[in-house]
Amino acid sequence: MRLIAIGDACLTEGFDLLGFDTYPNVSPEQAEQILCGLIINKEKALVFMEQALIAQAGKCYQRLRNESGQVIIVGLPPLHAPENYHPEVEDLVRRVLGINLEETSA
Image (cartoon, rainbow, N blue to C red; front, side, top):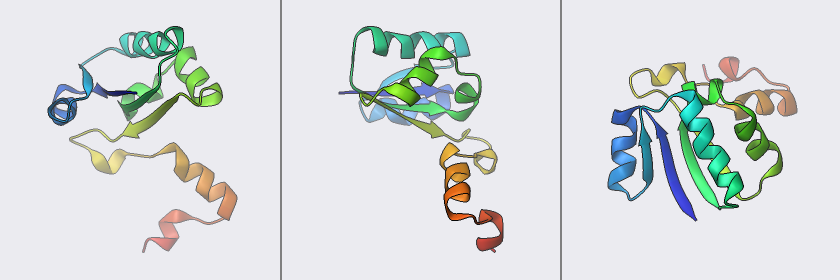
C-alpha cells in the first residue's frame, strides 16, 4: 500500500520524514493526474490531500471516493489556517444525527 501526501510544501514536509510519497505544491490538475494514476495502476493507497485541492478535484477523485475500496482519501486542513477546515464527514454526521455541531461544541 502506498502512503501519499499531496499539498503545500510545508504541509507535506512532515509526511516526507515519515516515508510518504509526497507531492508538494501541485496544481489541482497535477493532483488529479496522481489520483488517475492510482486508478490506472489499480494501486492500494492512503492519500492525505490538502482540502483546497479536494475542493477543486475532478473525475478521478470522485471515482475513487464513490467506487474504490482500494484508495482512502483523507482531507487535510491548510497548515496556516486550520480553523478553515471543514471535513466532508461533518455534513454526514449532521444529517444522520440531526444535530448542529456548532451548538454542541459550546
